[in-house]
Length: 398
Image (cartoon, rainbow, N blue to C red; front, top):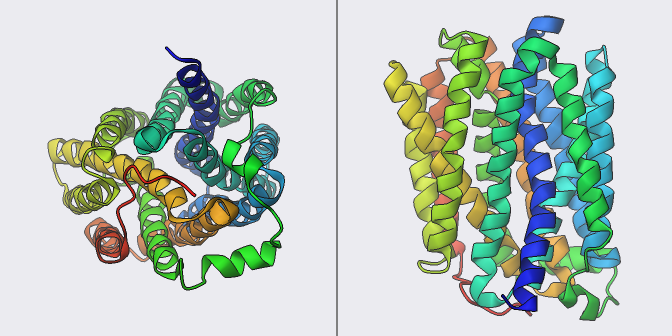
């Protein structure tokens, strides 16, 4: 194995660990919401707010740290966001009121929201064009590992030791990733790029005529994907409880569904350098929409499990392609800004999704109607890619 391949694998491992811990926190949040509801007697609207305040933080973090990544470097932003996320996660284990918990979830969200687009930008700028899509999708696959850990911790730890212990566990490994990141080199493209533009000029440039179509496509795509993902997945354990399964049983079923994320990523990683970014995004988004429809309409356990597994498979494969595709739309000088702004706008969908579910459940709206809304949103995202997107397979970054 060449020295270059070793450094790429190391970069993937270090960046991937950060993603794994991020996913572990987001994944556990869906189980913690279900446990908190029992502990603190939360209403469905309050449950929705826990998910949404996380996304408000992610929206602010993606924008702020995306802008900073084009000024102070990808690596520095990486370290700051990880610190913010792990400290916030650890402290939220010691809260006794919903208000303080929400404030800390906002800070955790800022760290998460800033890290994800910056990590994919750093990796995509450090890897050769012919492997870039595959490597970024593999980076995203660490997300599934984090969700699996979250499901395992939630299944074995929360019922026995409480949700507080789960949050403390989520904060600890982040210190290890932080240790690794001190030795991480910054993106070679960022190091050699000219940085004479102001932050405001970079923002304006993202919407200037050469990049307007790409930006519009990305904003629609990010909004639709994040809106449906957080609306559906943060509520999965709670939806299972509403369908009549016990809390423990719902954790079990969601763990099985989570396992399907890994083949979703790996199949997308294999296809993305062969069939292209647009193909993977459109096909996997349509697969997500169809699965969401059947999940919302499922009456039997068998249909619920099959549609849930397919929902995980297609949705997370699409996420992998989204993170590979986004940084490829812009030149190095505005890549962090462009990716951060798209992710930030998408997070508004992450705020609205859980709130909408909470509101509709409180209004006694049928699950079939709720999942039909997400189904339509995903189709809109797929159409935006098909109509406005350009193929970036094997294209050299500038």
